[in-house]
Image (tube, rainbow, N blue to C red):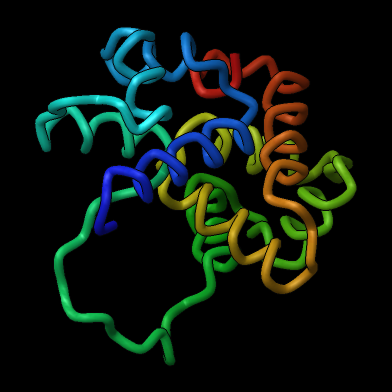
Amino acid sequence: MSTLAELSSVVRTRRADMGLTQAALARLSGLSRATVNQLEAASLQDLSLVRVSRLLGVLGLSVTVAPQRPTAGKTPALELAARSASVSYRKPLTAGVLRAALLQGQVPAAFQPHVATLLDEASSALLAAVVEQLHEQEGVPRAQVWARMRELARGFKSARGLWA
């Protein structure tokens, strides 16, 4: 990200897509609501990299200074998420089953523990990558995928602050 205006726009959009209020984002990132508001309005005078990193981490984003690398050969996010959700279970969750669950909001009974674990424990970055993949491949609005995740997490009675 190269400018405060760009950072402001990305934060505001991701927060809204995730269905978080400024107050909720502030609480989750350890910042004040006024700071989040000023950042989103691009009127913030100064914000340390540590604080920006905490805020972006909650949103599954990061500030990266590196040459861009091609994504060829990279494991798709849905596949990584399905594998991650399957670690403690005998029957593995497939990327296809996870895709259907996140698009339709219905999880087969045999895979409910897998999806509940994913939503409770996966990093925000992995969840954000899954949202991006579904958006790119299926044309589903990002906010709709985040809302579906939130709906599922609440149905599974997740205690994770991200879904509150």
